[in-house]
Length: 288
Image (cartoon, rainbow, N blue to C red; front, side, top):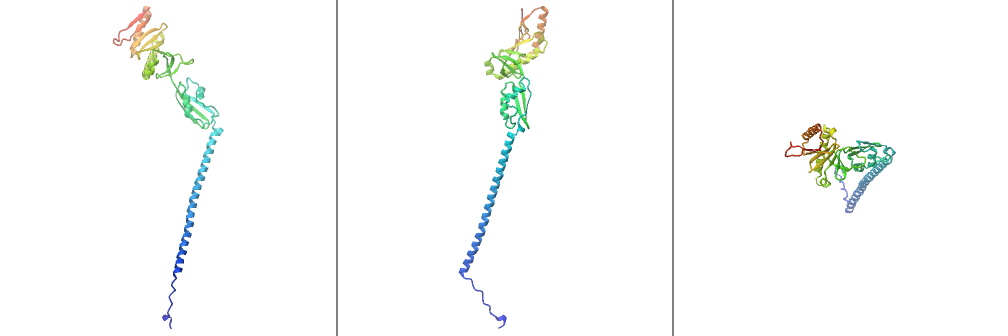
């Protein structure tokens, strides 16, 4: 028989048991491959979490160590306290009020609380505190500008803005205009109106003292009546000069004219009244 006509036997068919075994073997291989992949992903996640925790722990430790260094290092101890803006209070008094002393840690200072203590002094109108590393603290203050002594019946000091800010004490300035006629009730009921009256009285006092009448009959007192009307008490004989309501410049010029005329006559006034608002040109003079 020639090779062309030779018959070839077909390959044997696999048995059903062999096919099932092969399928099971393939499934087992796939499952075995999936398990390692899952364990690898979980391990990566755990390593990431542990790494982040380690970094956070190290950062916290470094921050704590840095803070401890700042709060304990002698380099940051207060070595200088500079107080600026004082005229009445001394730098030592302001520093003591702030509660700051040499050797204290500059970072441990509570500057807001220190500022509050400084502002507790009635003379201090405003204050700012700043650190200048490594160990300097600057306290900048603005003191109230005192303008008058106010008798209520107790005696107080008033600032130039009319604000009554403290009781008069020994050692306080006393070369100031004295304002009388105000009451504690009026101050409590109309604080803004009282401040305006005090400012008006201080302005009048300044105009009088810097004018020609100041040296001739020094100002002793300014009396406030009816909330706004002003009377000057001047000279060693305490002459009463009632000016009433503003404007006062023309009235002060009239007082000078009357005073000069009376001096020429040898007369001495006790009362000069220019407070008739209905008849501004009317002047009443009493002499002795």
